[in-house]
Length: 228
Ligand code: NI
Ligand code: MN
Image 1 (cartoon, rainbow, N blue to C red):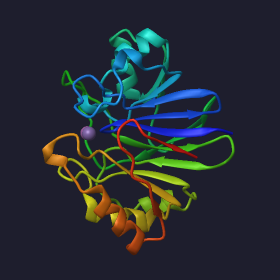
Image 2 (cartoon, rainbow, N blue to C red; image 1 turned 45 degrees about the horizontal axis):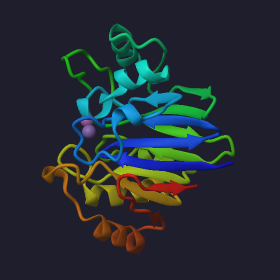
Image 3 (cartoon, rainbow, N blue to C red; image 1 turned 135 degrees about the vertical axis):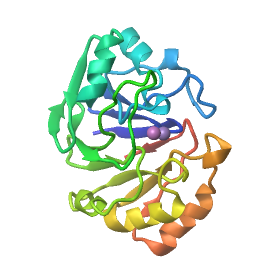
């Protein structure tokens, strides 16, 4: 089965697997690191981790144009419905469901989640995706370090996507501690470099992953993909 993970810049990712295209937190308009324009994006599903503008991003426009189903927490799917999104699938922390692209479980994330208009965005989440071939992707989304990452790691993670930008999320030091808790085979950094306040040296981070953990670091530039 062909699966790829493409970094679209900031916290936006595209997962292609099982013949389906999944957009994660498609913040492209106004994203200085965006690798693609929002109106060029195609999607079968859109996952939204929390309510902040740099994650909800272009979700409403892309969902309306493509007819994609948006998966998020209950509060965000209610809000999206009020914005005119036709197809939503509400979930909540700890719950899993089988979708055509694989099994998706919402994990906890230590963050906040207010929507751009001030509406309640429920609780932020990360994504644990079990592909059709059994391999697992853990996309932590925006979060600080938390000890329960060890529980997520017990599931056996093939690829972890972790924020390293600091300021709004974990920085490099805590992301190394996260890798030790999760013990993924490969780890990709995200949520850095978009703005000066989250600028990081990804090469230095990768060198630390190599020397301090058992994981293989994969550093992408916006627009680049990991073929799994
Ligand atoms: Ni956020
Ligand atoms: Mn963010």
